Image 1 (cartoon, rainbow, N blue to C red):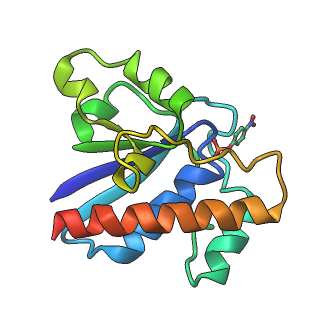
Image 2: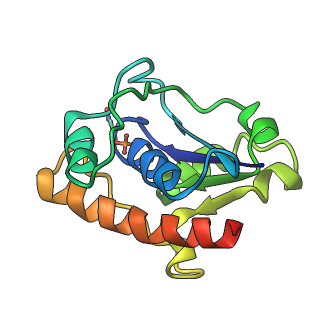
Image 3: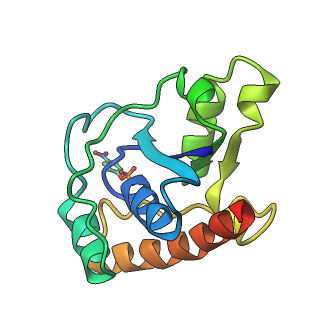
Length: 150
Ligand code: 4NP
């Protein structure tokens, strides 16, 4: 059983999509997938309505997810931690207690573009197009995570 955590800033736009997309590609017997935000602004909230809408358009229901903040114990509970951008990376890495914690943290788009450290752009202040763009980027990355688990 592999435990995978998706992390963004608010846990309402990007990482809930990443969680929903990856879950849809894996059997619940293979992996546990969760998501969290480095900030606590939206703790307890459901995903942004634009993330819910783009997921629904692709046949996924992410509306039951509830935002929560990343906590240091997540390093104990998860095997792989994927962050959406360089700011998330810095915020998570500064909580790492050891090399083994730090080695769990990866920029999600490095799966698609190795070593490039490309960000999944924050769509919060943009329009609906930004959410479809994020969906496509995450779908491609999650295909690779799923293949690597097979
Ligand atoms: P997320 O997007 O990190 O993809 O969930 C954001 C959501 C909320 C805020 C920023 C980014 N905010 O500033 O409230």
